[in-house]
Length: 285
Image 1: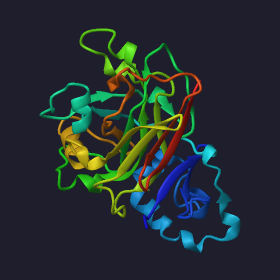
Image 2: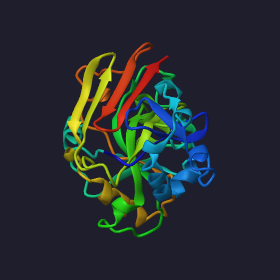
Image 3: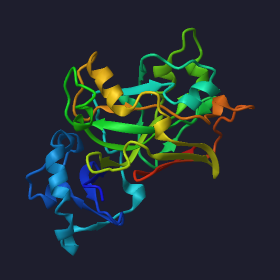
Image 4: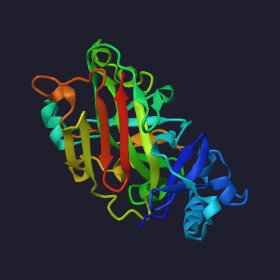
């Protein structure tokens, strides 16, 4: 049983109960000891997890029924959003890439953040889906070692790296960051699941369905670079901060890698599920 599932409702930090049917307001439940701002709570992640340990003692009038559609992005104002390209062996093969020697890093801009069940406004004819496991940094720093990296991660959540392939490959070399940063193209959620108590963190099942059809399905042990490797690599170059977001790569099955390609169309519903972490449900308009 994980210690904490941390979410955001109406801009306020909440903890989702293990039943996934209700939540408590962190500031109110802590008697004001913890803030309502999700970003400030992530900076105090160990205190949030200790509060989560006492959820069983919550009184009925402290619990609020959970409507999954009310959940906002659990990391509303990250300083940095990193993303790793070509980080699954099968995906590298389908895109005709060799295996990278070091993590291939690009960025997604914070203005592209979306809600877990937010709509995706398609632009052009080549918008694609990319299911991803996302890590959220709790304790920042530089030169973090691989062995210490997990202790710097607050938790994991589900991500969708929606991509405008026409924009991404409009020039040579490609402009990954822009092609993946249109409005709403960075979906994260539905909540952050505490990493320290997540026993399956090293190998999670991931599935992406588009309008009910399975497009991507993998275990995360197909990663080329695992989360500790990525955190260590990034921190040896950039300073990491609490609340930073790390997209860890997508598995095989993306629309651009199919024959013929399968790009998103108006009305498509993209459902992205990761074992023990929940589901995103994004409707294309």
